[in-house]
Image 1 (tube, helix red, strand yellow):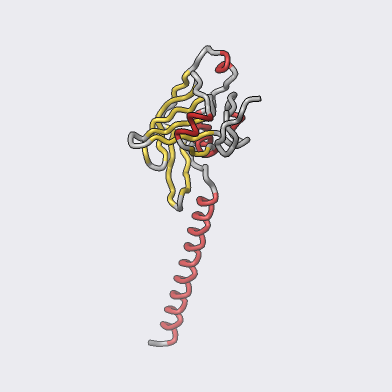
Image 2 (cartoon, rainbow, N blue to C red; image 1 turned 90 degrees about the vertical axis):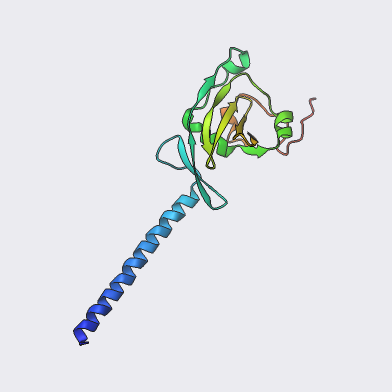
Amino acid sequence: MNKMDIKNWYCFFVCFIVIGFIFACNNNAANKDASQSIVQGDSLTKSELIYNKEVFTDTVLTMKIVKSKELQCTEWKEPEKADILKLLYALQEVSGREWNDCYGDWTCGIEGELIYRDKKCYYRLDAGAWIILNDGDKQQYFVCKDDNCWKYFPSESFCDKEGNIIDSP
């Protein structure tokens, strides 16, 4: 092997290492961006959720607004379809007992189907500040406990943030 062949192989090897390093850095940057964002996606009704280092593509499949002529429901402006997943991520999961004791069941809301953590679920978003998900095997209750989600609901919780019933004066 002459000196020219050695230089060519050396040049090839260095270029191979540099290109591999560039691709590795770009891939790490893309993964970092995805893990820092809970809600992202190519449409308003699809998003990626990072949960226990697993990536789920959540999607709102259907949406049916349930209207009521009751006075309390006339104050409620239903969230847009694009807001349903944002609301679901903003709400906190609670037990069925806390949901039943602390949140009202209004006659207006939104019903439909969505994919949540790779499972197709029936959902009911209620003006009483909650969402129920049912995938056929289990039912999950999500409620508003933080100030950032109350703007979507005209109701109030009957409990404090720890789930204790608030005594009336």
